[in-house]
Image (cartoon, rainbow, N blue to C red; front, side, top):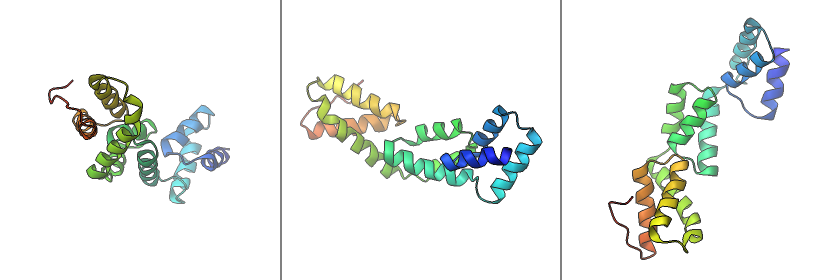
Length: 158
């Protein structure tokens, strides 16, 4: 039964060991049976939290533009251990993260043109903050984008 549950869940989407263990607990699979199946699936490479974390970081950073902080929180929420989370997010190059933030701001910039500079700055920086970017990086990217449009931004904003 535990084997069938895990196989069905893994055919839908990759899962972490913690996610599979939780699913087995919900279905009242005895702990001993669950551990045996999870251990065997790990041996066979069907469960690999390291590979899951790396794929998650690549996918969510490139697809949704999430920063290290947001990616780490998502992985922890899925039961990935801290060392694996740190390894996966540290693979992201800071320059790559900066470029992703810049692209996100560029995409959103046009829709804010009717707003005053302070509101635009706040909205754009807020969008980056929700995606996990630190405030200093967010402000720097927004300031740079608005200055390219010929607007002046105070260094002491917000």
